[in-house]
Length: 410
Image (cartoon, rainbow, N blue to C red; front, side):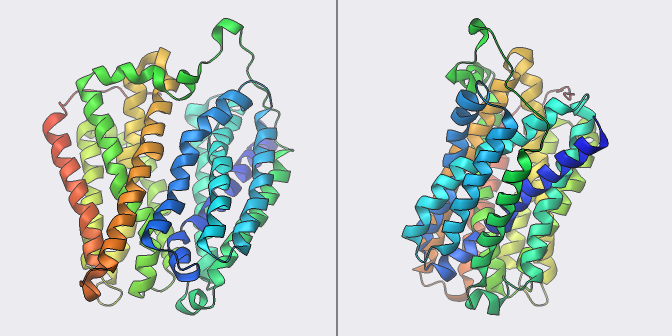
């Protein structure tokens, strides 16, 4: 791979996640503050991510995998996304906003797989080289968050003046740039297969790997993966609004600490995975969810600011130790025949079903405590719920998952 190709792939990754980070982090603040959305309406908007994850395999499997170059599909989806994002920028109430974000997520979620596919096809040794390309996506997310805070859009005055709306305009412009830039990416044509080798719909959705659930350990892990997505949804949906209402300065920029942590722990994970094994590593990830939400419940933007910062910084352990470890474990358990299907199954279960349930629960809990006489302790009650759920999942996993030596894939 030439230096020019590496630069192109890195810039692609940077923009891909800059676009997502530009508006998604502050969405939970924007909706109630600027569109007067209720907790249920906020949950419905966030759930569009899950619907996008569920529908995405059909778009990739039925269109991109068979008929068109991946870079062209990427270009078209981001150009469409730019238009939809601009319409979200112009929306004045949640009823007008929702159809645009729903269609946008159906268009955006497939691009996450497409940028990986384009990169893998250009790399001679993806196992060693891909991380150096993918890390630019994390950088893009961090830069987006810092930009929002540096421009003051997430400050108390900025929120009051409706400046968070500008995040959609920024994302629209970045999507337009990536859409046009994608036409310059290396050609990535579909891999031709004979009729007998064509992928079935069940394979695209990961359903071919459902027989892995016959293994008791994998079934326990699978159920834990779905359930732990409920606490994860609380973070995505409520964290930025919570930090803003608590009075933490530059909340979006400070949330970028979580992505820095994610990148650092991603580098440490292979060593820890080998040293401590799958069960202990994933239990540490679940414990981090419990600790994070307890820190959010009892921290504040005054003398206990450090508790909020530690809670944000725990994102690397929360995400990497559970979800990335789970991907490694799934790859090792699946075997050559079901590797792709197994990853599709766990993605459908977590980003699709798990987070869909999680956003609904988070919306219900937020709305419930808004109408309950809990006063200034509203956020404490909201965060204690996912802390309790994560603690229960941790306990059940510790009891029912039998320790085993799992080879590290790759």
